[in-house]
Image (cartoon, rainbow, N blue to C red; front, side):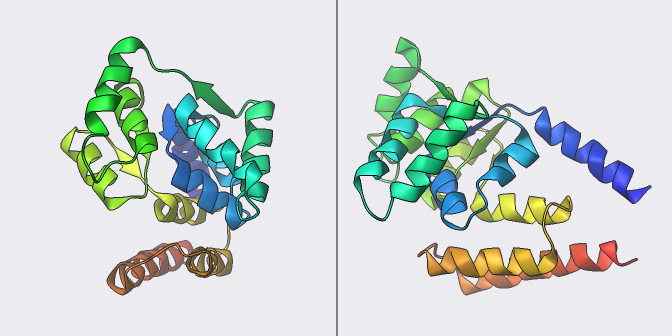
Length: 192
């Protein structure tokens, strides 16, 4: 019974239209978990500006592997690149004036109205997205969803958090305690 419910919930996630900023793609790739996005959401969209930003990493030693992996996902079709129309370009330009919003985040926010879920990590962009009424999830939330839906074990979940920190993904100690508490709750429910 429990697995059937998990499968139904995962199927709902797979039907969402999801757009991502650079950070979740890069960090998930760095920890070897990029394909979780495909497993959870089926298809993930990125604006052309975000794809360009990521693929520019092929020129950098510390971004090469992630850029190649994202490029492969684009070639395989489960990451799809979209372009903005003229009105969305204007909106992105206005959003990027905010010093807390990076260009990639601005384009994701500008096309957010086309999507059910935005993948963003940066606090400023997340706050802005919430103010605009968008549903959001970040890299940590994606990993927690993967654990919740049985796509990884509890140990893999913990290792993924540690790996993120290893790659300079900053997690506030209070947030880490909250995340681990939620993961422990999921673990306890699975053991019932």
